[in-house]
Image (tube, rainbow, N blue to C red):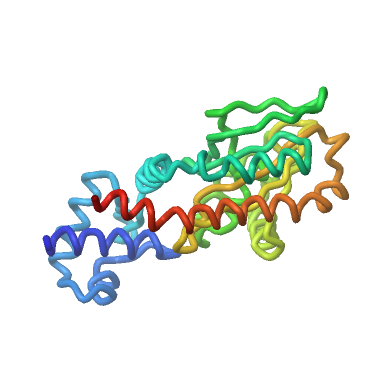
Length: 257
């Protein structure tokens, strides 16, 4: 096994899981790798775009490029296929638009959807994007990111409507609330007159990789209705999580052949 490759991946994993920037000495002690070796590997990772260096603090953080790799992995896992049945069931239970979303930087991308059968419904499209902090599907993913990531997002909040959370502390409190209750809601914070509800989807190792949610007109999805529908959305997200777990062995077996 290539020791340089192993050490480079170990550095990436340490940075990706850290809730704060790390320096060379800390990484060397944590991974039991020589400081000169750590420094050399970090420089290579910076040049490749996987790590960012802060000259002022002499520290390093994982870059957004790891999210791009994660998006490619999601495509290979065929998340859409695994989510089909839970999404269809959720559509039948709620009769609202059902959306499957993944995180791409500060935005969510809708990778699959089922349209509401009702004559009055909200518009969304596969491939559409929205600020993650302003919609339920995005907040349901963001809430499970590490504290450093959340604080970074909180410094870039922009107001889109009168209900968008644009205050840093209010945003962080909202993230804590979502983690506690297990679902996220939005009330016209991206598009006025549109409300949403979403829950996180976990990959087998416990990382949130996507979310499943519903959206509809504010007149129909009032606060009481959203709370009533929350168990159905949580159940749908849990079903996709279970599908991912059960699909993992067969996927690994196929790749090994």
